Amino acid sequence: MDNILEVHNLVTAYQGKKGYIKAVDGVSFDVKRGETICIVGESGSGKSVTSMSIMRLVEFENGEILDGEIRYNQENLLHKSDEEMRQIRGSEISMIFQEPLTALNPVFTIGKQVTEAILFHHKMSKKKAMERAEELVRLVGISDPAARLKQYPHELSGGMRQRIMIAIALASEPKLLIADEPTTALDVTIEAQILELLRTLRRERNMSIMLITHDIGVAAEMADQIIIMYAGKIMEIAPTKDLFDQPLHPYSFGLLESVPKMDGERGVPLTSINGSIPSLHDVPKGCRFAPRCPFATEKCHQEEPPMEVKGNRQVACWHVDHLLEQNLLQNNSQKGGVTVDE
Ligand code: ATP
Ligand code: SF4
Ligand code: MG
Image (cartoon, rainbow, N blue to C red; front, top):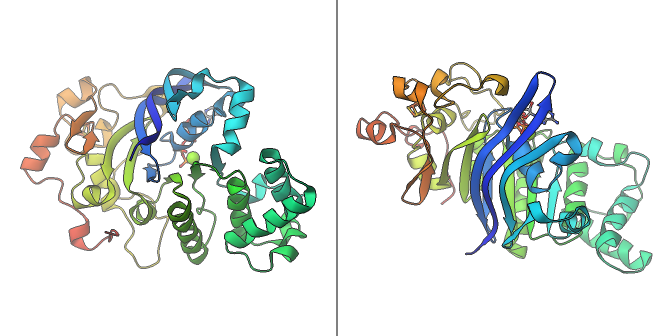
């Protein structure tokens, strides 16, 4: 599989109230064609800023991409004009946002919003666009599309609205779909349906999906590869099964340990990792995870560990070999916490 997206050393900063912060600080990863990758990390780790950077939307929020490359089909998006980016957004890369209600315009019918998305990308009559809208809405699992298209956003449930957002994101037949916490606001049953829909779309359209979630259980179900982010940096990148078999980074280990058991409970805070993510105004010297890491040494507090390639994965930790030798990162799946689809 070749890469559809290659992010290299991305640095994105904001001018905040208390000064400049690097919300994403030297992030590199690839997404292959037809692959689903999940970015996982606690709140504030830079997941959304990474996706907004790829879409070049940070510029609209006082953000600035200071360094790096974002190559989509080998072309650096950072060299594209605003007009070129407008074409790419939507036609090649689409994004689903977390809050479906705020993302839909309350004063227009669903039909108008879906057909507008279609007409933005394809020249066709309004009638044809409406037919296409019905197809799309049916595709995302909504019955009686003709009736739904006449309704307004507030008349639909949260799950329905999120399906409509997915239909709009698919209107352009994107090659890469970025979904930023698409199910967080939804209940567990609807979440399962939306995730199943994404899986089907990926399979049928060979679409690449970049799914952002704070829920490692969702990542386990969906991802080929998982990217673990912490305080603006990537800690580990690994194929899903390998990560659950044996996390290599203490933070990944902590995340897996704190996965809620599969009894329907979810969204439980990460309780087994002590402390909280550092303020980006005051990033710890050395390894960013050191203040919370039970294995931190003096070196960890002084020097930042580089990202190292370990077989088919990457990890940024000084002591990974030692921790493995000593069996200190004993895996969670053996304890029955989470099952990973083979
Ligand atoms: P969550 O799980 O809560 O969505 P996240 O991993 O998506 O978290 P980001 O939204 O990417 O986190 O934010 C990373 C950091 O960047 C945070 O410290 C946040 O305060 C900061 N940040 C994000 N957007 C802005 C903005 N528009 N202006 C200033 N700072 C911002
Ligand atoms: Fe922990 Fe040190 Fe590894 Fe950071 S580098 S994760 S502090 S052991
Ligand atoms: Mg976010």
